[in-house]
Amino acid sequence: MYFTLAWRNIWRNKRRTFITVGSISFAVFIAVVMQSMQKGSYARMVDTAVSFYTGYIQVHKDGYWEEKILDNIMPLDEGQISQIEGVDHVKLVFPRLESFALASKEMNSKGVVVLGIDPDKENQLTNLKSKIAHGQYLQPNDDGALISEGLAEYLELGVGDTLVLIGQGYHGVNAAGKFLVQGVLDIPSPEMNSGTVYLPLQRAQWFYGAEGLISGYVIDVQEQNMVPGVTAELQTLFDSEIYEVMDWPTMLPDLVQSIELDYVSGLVMLIILYFIISFGILGTFIMMTNERSYEFGVMTAIGTQKLRLVLIMFLEILMLAALSVVVGSLLAMPLVLYFNANPIVMTGETANMYEKFGVEPIIPFAKDPMIFIHHAAVVFIVSVLLSVYPVVSILNLKIIKALKS
Amino acid sequence: MSVISIKEVSKIYNPDKIPVKAVDKVDLEIEKGEFTAIVGPSGSGKSTFLNIVGGLDNPSSGAVVIDGVDISTFKESALIDFRLNNIGFVFQSYNLIPVLSSLENVEFIMLMQKIPKEQRHARAIELLKEVGLEKHLDRKPSELSGGQQQRVAVARALASRPKFILADEPTANLDSHSTENLMGMMADINKKEEATFLFATHDQRVIDKARRVVTLEDGRIVKDEKR
Ligand SMILES: Nc1ncnc2c1ncn2[C@@H]1O[C@H](COP(=O)(O)OP(=O)(O)O)[C@@H](O)[C@H]1O
Ligand SMILES: [Mg+2]
Image (cartoon, rainbow over the protein chains, first blue to last red):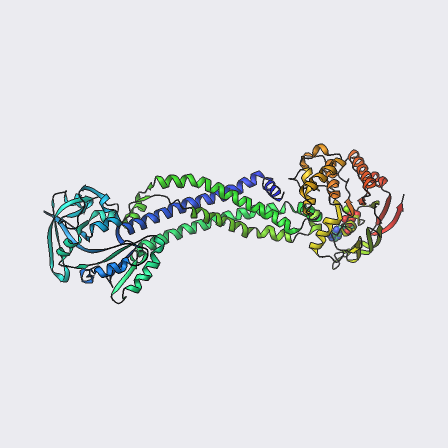
């Protein structure tokens, strides 16, 4: 009967209930949609950056990440690779040699990033093979190169053409080499797509005069949440005087910071929204309480304990909150699911920001049930906090005064 | 032993500013089965007195003994439970919980007494029959006339099997026909069930039904006649 009573009570003033539920569910809707979009875009940024470039963790010679020069590289050590492989939750370990060069064809040239890779393992992390637009993927003993599509267009290079790389090698030697373009890659990161060359590791080592040397190990981990644990363990394995073990947030501080900034600015907006809505909810609670003081007076007179009245009022408040959360979530769900399946394509300013971090400017919404749960929790917590008013006024109700109202 | 035993009860409002002696050293004994009216002009202290007898308000001094229990020193929560189990109330108007039907309103008080569902349901129906509302069990208060609402209130007051029923001007908002009906019904119940009624009124038709009439003036009993 208490449930029936509470349920009927919230429908005593249908208009007010509609307005209250409407405004709370509107806030939930905005919050869920906004955060699904944010989380989706962050996941995509991180995913692109991590899975296409950094991996979750890397080990380099100390100082390499700060200053990516060939003097800061280190010897490839199979023993270290098996050591890393022995750490729990490590999925994949492979070496890379990364440096810069000038790519040219006839009179045109362009600065590029050269990545010496283990073609097979690199593909396991980055799915590079699937990005081949023309030509063939690399084999470990190939002599040729893969170039990004942007570079191919800029230098008017195609499969079968010869790419000339000129640069500075290990210990300042001159580096120069000719490479057959074996394949052209369509890389989703606009920055990388404009100028990247992939060589098999040994060819890159030969080119830079850095036989047996690498810029570091790239490590993939089973799940993102295992990164801190694996990083910590690797830090005990590698002497921090000589090596640096870096997780992806350390390697990509700009990305992490810009995500945090964006998240916080969204959060501030939501807090303001919830704050405004809270006033509306409080107003409803005040009306729900005050207009019933005579009724509460009668109920206490005939023998209803005040705690029971509080319970009934509390049930009403929980019902309003639950109703709002359900309505808000039901409104948000189709939108979130739709944009999860059909990502929004960004243009203008926002697109530029994405491209700055080497991410294709599209936003697939995250369909994370935690987002819904979080905002449901926010609504319930706000309601419970605001229910202090009805609770206190019921507990302070003076029966004679109430009966005279 | 009297059902109600009032000893030297006084109530002074605003004791610090301009004191109003609403009830002034009243003694009164009410026996089981009485059908008693408290009468007197407006402002004579009827409501104040009834509120004190019903444990809704504390006396400034004196003792309120209900069935041998002095309730004048009870704490709020104990007083609420005492009222639930010992006193039935009928107010002037808007007695009922608006979102509950007649049946539910009568059941509600027994729900608080933790009476099992079947039992309270059966008793609620029986009582509503007794007050002539068996056809309106599922009506909400807003779908009932003022007189019908008061009958539901009487049924509810009886439902908890109280020691006595207090009614403060129960007919004040009723027309003469409904007043006759309600008073007749209350008198019947009083006879049939030996239910004790104490009501305040200044309506002559109501006074005529009473078997004992206690007259208040300026908070004092000036007349107490049995018929
Ligand atoms: N809460 C109060 N504060 C001050 N004076 C009051 C209060 N309630 C009643 N009174 C005064 O007490 C006296 C008795 O009032 P009341 O018991 O309501 O009389 P009745 O019910 O017979 O009309 C009146 O003079 C009234 O003005
Ligand atoms: Mg009065």
